[in-house]
Image 1 (cartoon, rainbow, N blue to C red):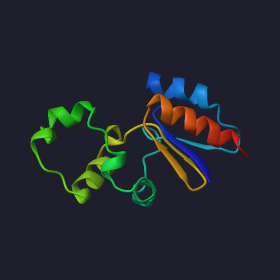
Image 2: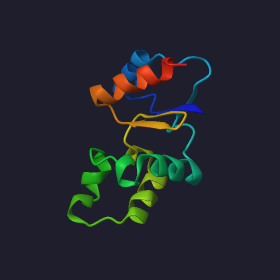
Image 3: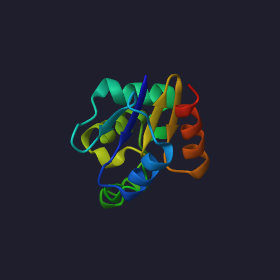
Length: 118
């Protein structure tokens, strides 16, 4: 499976999509207009190693809710991601058995290579 979870209103996500240049076989899911399902979030977390690995601490709501002052369990993090799409660290790019999370330059470069490797 080749799939990218992104936010169409995010300039960074749009820039990364241009850079990765996914082909027509890649499924794109705008998480704002097509909410993530629990099994999708569970699969991302399984591939990434934890829910924490796909959780964004840069989200405005993270500060608004005072989450930095709390100790969040994996189940808390899962719940927050499912309740509010902004808590997903974006984009999440899945290419076969590989997952690429976030917008770090090395991550995006590796995703682009993987998506065009075959």
